[in-house]
Picture 1 (tube, rainbow, N blue to C red):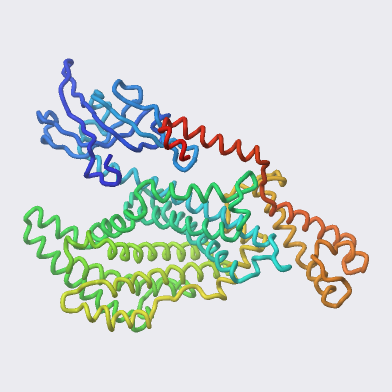
Picture 2 (picture 1 turned 30 degrees about the horizontal axis):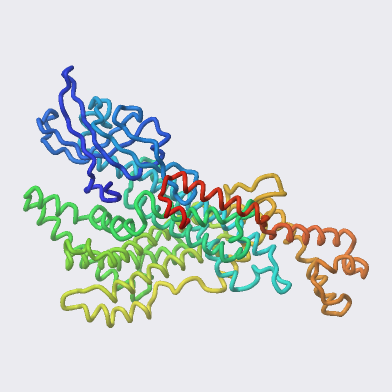
Amino acid sequence: MAGSDAGGLESTGIVFTGDDGELYVRLNWTKRYITLAAISTVLGLAFKLKDPENLLGKGEDLGITCALVPSDTPGVVLGRRHDPLGIPFYNCPTEGHDVVLKLEDAIIGGADGAGRGWRMLMESLAAGRGISLPATGSGSVKATGRIASSHAKVRKQFGLSIGKFEGIEEPLARIGGYSYLLEAARRYTNGGLDKGAKPAVVTAIAKYTFTELARKAINDGMDILGGNAISRGPRNLLAHAYVNIPVSITVEGANILTRTLMVFGQGAIRCHPYTLNEILALESGDVKAFDANFWKHIRHVVRNLFRALGLSVTRGRLASVPASGISARYMRKISWASASFAFLADLAMGTLGGNLKRKEKLTGRFADIFSWMYLGSAVIKRYEEEGRRQEDRIFVEWAMEYALANMQEAFDGLYKNMSVPGLTWLFRGPIALWSRMNALSHGPSDKVGHKVAVAIQTPGEQRDRLFPGVFVGSDETEGLARLERAFRLAHDAEPLERKVKAAIRSGDLPKQPIDKLVNAAVDKGVLSAEEGKVLAVASAAAADAIEVDAFTLDQYRQTATTIVATVADVDIGTEQLATV
């Protein structure tokens, strides 16, 4: 029950020789969470393996090891499951008491795999952190984008689509920008995994940022849909996503831990050109190797200091980049951020040493900078690979300005909070002031946000490319298909609505809701009969699309009764049930 602390594993395995002369392992464990355990045929188990008789010739304490345990093995205890926010997904506790298996059959990799579990865990986690959860995050944002943009076009207040109000444009722009950004990063990450890379740091970045941005996008979608989002029932397209999003935030390493410990904590050493070599040299007592890497490290720090200063003063213009146009502008800024990040990371490691891992507010800010540099690089990669589509430029600009603004916020936090012996005043005073005055970015402009919001509210090829892979359905009387139909009809009816509004202003038609004036507009010649039909159909579709589910009191009580009965089945106490 160690959670994310693999070093705190309490599950154990003991190597011993059976009566048949074969090597066996006796396993004991109590696990609070194992995904799909209750319906599994095989359990994946990580445990600390001990070999008290040194039968494997590797010592007595072999460390973390991974094994596959058939679920029907004597001693395996299953049968209960959790209820993760009402999602029909099996997450379960399990126990094992004196579970005996042949060592070669159970341990992944056989005897050679003993003690290699940590590496196996990191490599296997790359699939969840780099593929499934980012795909879920990107898919959630794209689905939210289709739903929110369609609703914003269809829903009217004060005679206007709510998507025309700047207060709605702002969250719509975020959703559209996130969609382009996350799909770029998803493809970029999967490209590396597809080539055989197993980048633990990159996949941790992907897991953390994708799920966090999905949470923000769904919250924005809930705000845009308003009453349509909080009224549950078959017509509600967002409620389940809203309720479920904490699950992806929590699994495969909770986001707080991933941000503050994993992204920078792993990357600071593993991705550094010299630090890991220095540590290995110290461990092996190789003074010559340590000296060689140490002086290279010093030159590296000095070079990054002057590079950071030069790029800061010129706002990145000194950086040489293999691109032109908007891509070159943003690649230079990422180079500027990268140089500053590299110098500050070395400074933090040098001044704080082992205490850095306990300064989680600082490591979290370093993780934010590192993460947004990666995401920004993915955006540029997508834009270049897709042929620099002119219509996508607004999404690139929004995403990059957003990424740079997040980096800037993290840099400002570092300057205000880093303690550097003898120089703290310099960082918290002049350098912090210069950073704010010479910011990487202050975020996307209102003008760019407006263009993004308009683009995602316009039917066509670009919108379909931005929100691909979202199931719409073919039955236009239900689900997202109903809303998408109303969206298309609302777009087609816009010029007709303008005609009616002009007639109202000129006094040819009375001041009434447009859907009440269709017949009068046709009679007055403001609209043709065919145009009147188009406007009437669009108005009816809009009214149907924004309708919410309603229930009789008996139906609603039946729902509540079902919930209570479900809770009662969990066998909780009478006092707790009465509270429910």
